[in-house]
Image: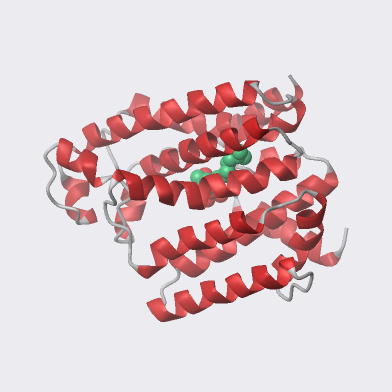
Length: 278
Ligand SMILES: CC(C)=CCC/C(C)=C/CC/C(C)=C/COP(=O)(O)OP(=O)(O)O
């Protein structure tokens, strides 16, 4: 393992991501590919999230678009892009998917997202999660067309679960990813994150959105059954970990937005072992 690959692996481990156990089960070249994809996502996410003038964020993302150009010209300069070179070649990772991830981060960087309409939320999820899924299934070695259906649905299911888990945390950063269509349906006129957070009907909005997430989980499962089993193992683990988070949220019924819902580390490991070996 090169020093650069080791440094990226260490960054992914230290990030504490829910997806670490699933990525670790992969054979070496595929694992290195996933770590590099994750590091890329983290990097562009950090640019979109940082406390900085909007122009700086846009410049940072524009630089990453040029870096993707250099990657596909075979001359990456950034260490993370360098780590993507071999995976990009070996696993036919697509340029449009990397660019979609950057476009998704840009949606968040241009202006803080606050109650987008359902179509915009869907586009955002496609870019920041399903595009990551399209890169991931290739790194896993899944080659069927149905693998992109897994990415489509699992990406959306994970992102919506993430949104439902982090409503309070996102509001503290002045962001609200819940769709305004559902706010209006439940009589919430405001799109101001701190106000919506206090609204009595917020739980009903979350309940409705959780049904959308559950439907994507079910469709992702159906698409996985149309794929070869072995390469989809990490996707099943990722789905199981986040599925457990969604179940906890539904059981908790959004009674209290201030208590963070967490799946304990042992449970994540157990799910990884269960889906990794059976
Ligand atoms: C086909 C396939 C594999 C699809 C999945 C694609 C994928 C991994 C999307 C990521 C979406 C997401 C909720 C990221 C949060 O990561 P985080 O590391 O911040 O999560 P955490 O806060 O739970 O640790």
